[in-house]
Image 1 (spheres, rainbow, N blue to C red):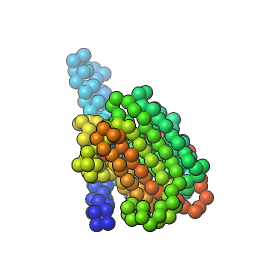
Image 2: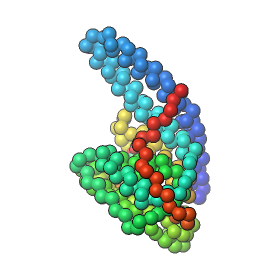
Image 3: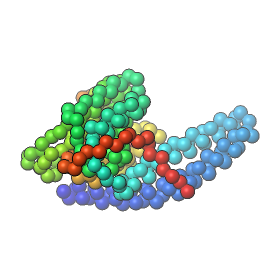
Image 4: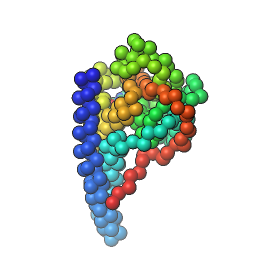
Length: 258
Ligand code: ADP
């Protein structure tokens, strides 16, 4: 509990910092890209190549700041009753586009309805972030499985998960990829921790997932071993309120500037 609290406080501080900086930074990037585009219109071939590099870097930096903004906005939530099953199946088409052709996507649903109280946009972000990591862990192809189920969490499991016994929606995201060493697995929820090469990873995916799931009173369990793939289990408490199907939203969330 102590460690969870420290993690939550760390996330909160990073979130506030990130949100404040990211917004201004994004505006400056728009200026950089805008002037580079203007210059390109009257540049020779060699300069044009250099300017393309500048614009590509600005685009990458823009993607990073958007992630920072999304991360900091795990604070501002719009909580509703969401059917996890509908949400996951609604994402299937987008997930197909997100992964590569050498990865097989298997989506299974054990029950028709899993109502939880959460921000649907954030819940989508959880699944997308987990799917991106699964994809990146399978450079040579593999199988990405996303399964939803209903679990009755007893006292024993509740202690393991660090939560209360009761009815939970279980979202399992499993890959047949590279897996993680115990050292890496211990650090994945740390903001900015990444093992991906520069420009590929931000190290914010899993800390965002952690923040969103914690906010919905849920729990995450990660089971991984090098060469054996990774299984991420997200438990979210079921609500007794009637489910409302929410259509999938476009990802990533585009954020207004200005
Ligand atoms: P990023 O994806 O930008 O690196 P994350 O916070 O999402 O940031 O993940 C942190 C690190 O956790 C990754 O760099 C990777 O080493 C590890 N990781 C996360 N998910 C998986 C997975 N499914 N398989 C293997 N490693 C993973």
